[in-house]
Image (tube, rainbow, N blue to C red):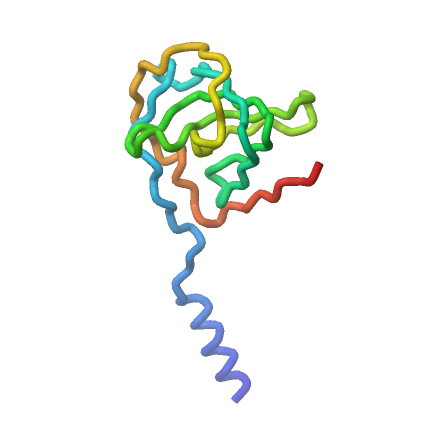
Length: 139
C-alpha cells in the first residue's frame, strides 16, 4: 500500500500544474527614452516616500533617495517609470534597475528629453513568477 501511495504522489507531483515559470503581465508595450537603447538617463528624481515592491520587476525606494530615470512606460498613462536607485553613500546599496510608480518620486533635474519611443521587450518587465521578493533592510 505504501508503495502504491508513493507512486501516486510522485506522478501527481510531476504532472501537477506549476506556477513557476509563468509569465507576469507586461506593464506596457512602449516606453519613452532619451535614445533607442534607453541607455541615457532622462531625469533625476527624488523619492517622496518609501516604496516597497510587490515583485522583482520593481525596485525598492527609500524616501529621499535619488532615482535616475531611464524610461517612462507609455501605455498606461505614464504610471510606471524605469530607473536606477543608489544609496546616499556610493557602495552601501548595489545599483539596480527596475520599475516604480511615478507617483512616489518628484523630478528634480531634467537631463535629456524623452523623445524616442521604443517597444518594450520580454526582458524589460515580464520576468517569471519565480523571482525573489526583496525585503527592504531597516536603517
